[in-house]
Image 1 (cartoon, rainbow, N blue to C red):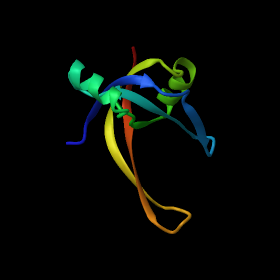
Image 2: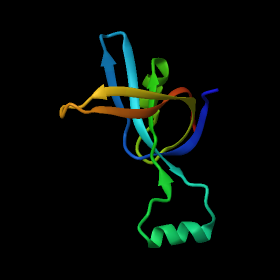
Image 3: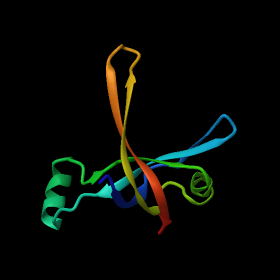
Length: 109
């Protein structure tokens, strides 16, 4: 089973890309709070450690157009999708991996 459900806020405006005039993809990062107690959160903040995760999300097709129209930095959104790991060769010749959430559903909250 490969299912991911997230609720978070956009860290920046979505980036929209049209591929060959047929496909549209919207990409953005979410700030998703870590599930920790208030005490633990305060301690992490004092230590300068992150209290959120920042997954990369991509949305295709009609939903990408809706994301472009209605979402911007700071907006809260719910995402349901699946994890996808992309493999590519970096300019330095090393193989790199990037994990993204390939969204099936977007809920504007």
